[in-house]
Length: 373
Image (cartoon, rainbow, N blue to C red; front, side):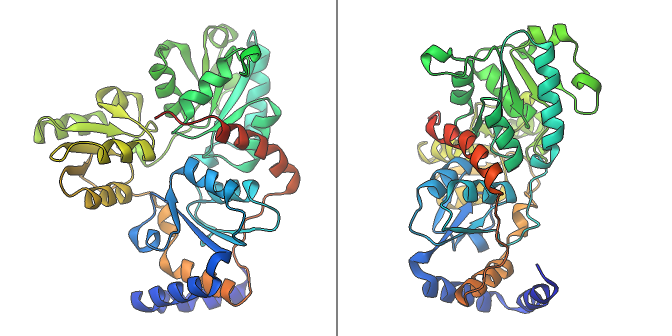
């Protein structure tokens, strides 16, 4: 933002909720079908109420790829999501992130130079083909690097099927990998490997702070999965004792958690799944059932309100907020929409063409590989 834009935005912080709501609604009406607002499940209610489409990373990526009629896509999420939308949308479309400071701690744990070095080191130690499978929670540069190495992106909805594709022989349409390098979330990689029937010993961690990731060649050759040492700050807050306590408080409650939680938490839970899979599990459950959900608080609270005939509560007792998502607020949304309605674009997210072309390959592979139901 320029200094002038920052000064103009400052006036929105002084506006009442009613005025902000009125401005957003007015700008939406004025822009009509030229505008689509995408909202991630973790956004606060004050923002999600204005979303034309709500979903997880896979849903919203698919929508961005298919939404050809909107001139402007305003992404209420975090930076890597807006990057993916820009990569998958057409050159005529403009993607906007209401607050450019809304990033992702996990995505920032893997930079292009470090991942490129790690790939070289691991391939030098391994026998057989190593294919990267990169979580969509990553930068466009990492997605491009993934494509260059013959890999694919994944989301928590379809990671198991992407892993299966990577390990399948090339003659069967797979990537023909002997090993998968799972980047950047160690927990998603480990939990998925175990869910597929592999042992925890089939996974080794690449420590970015140590030469060769702290791994010996023998460790790499014995492993099927090399895990980058990244994690989600939100889901790491859930601990095994939370599962124990909630079962004591609510006998018979079902515990469902996101696979970004630690292996210990997932092992104690009844189910693990993406945000969409969690929503489906709770909403398809019989009335009167009880659920403890291990994921971001905004989504859990919304799920509880939508299902008043069953108990839906957070796994822990303290709010677990993604503060990066929380940076998207009504003042920022009103500001960018007012500017759009006046013919001015602010906070555009634009991925360089050469990076986008390569990253699109990895994202397209992700979209083509269906999610596990």
